[in-house]
Amino acid sequence: QEFLQVDTTNILVICGGAFAGLEKIIADRLQKRSIGFGAHVADPDKRRVGELLQKAEPEDLLKFGLIPEFVGRLPVIATLEDLDISALVKILREPKNALVKQYAKLFDLEDVALTFTDDALEAIAQKAIERKTGARGLRSIVEGLLLDTMFDLPTEPDIAEVVVDREVVEGRKEPVRVLKGKEEAA
Image (cartoon, rainbow, N blue to C red):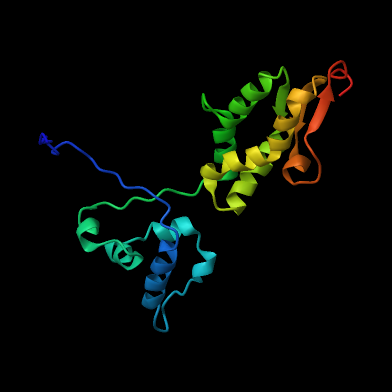
C-alpha cells in the first residue's frame, strides 16, 4: 500500500456537533462559582442553551467524555446561536434547494401547485424550535404534513393546487385541495 504524506501546515480542522447535555455540565461548573453573600446566582434553567455554550471550557469537554488528546488539539471553541423563527423560515424559503421549492417541484410533476402561507412556514419553524431539532428537523415536519397528500395525488387528477396553512401545521385540518376550475373561487 502506498504511503501518502500530507502537509498539514495550512489545514484548518473544524469539529462540529450538537453536544447535547454539554450545557448541563457548563451550568454545574458555573453554579459552583456562585458562592458567598455577594455572589450573583443565576438560575441555570433561565439561561438559554446558547448562552451557556458560549462559556464552554476544555474541562467541560473532558467531563462530556472527549479524550484529553483530542481536546488538546482543539485550541479554539466557538459556539453558534440557536436559530430563531425568521432564520428557519428563510431556510425553508430562500436557498436554491429550499424545502418549499423541492416540494413544489414534486407537486409540479403531478401538475399541482403547492402553496405554503406565511403563517404556515412560521408554524413549521416554531415546531422545529419546540422539538429542538433546528433546521435538521424541517424536512421531517414538512414530510409529515404532505405525505398523505403526495400519496393521493396520482389518483386525483382534478386537483389544481394544495394549500398548507397554520391550521394544517397545527394538525387541525388536512391540506386544502383546490380542484381544477375552482381556483378562481378559492
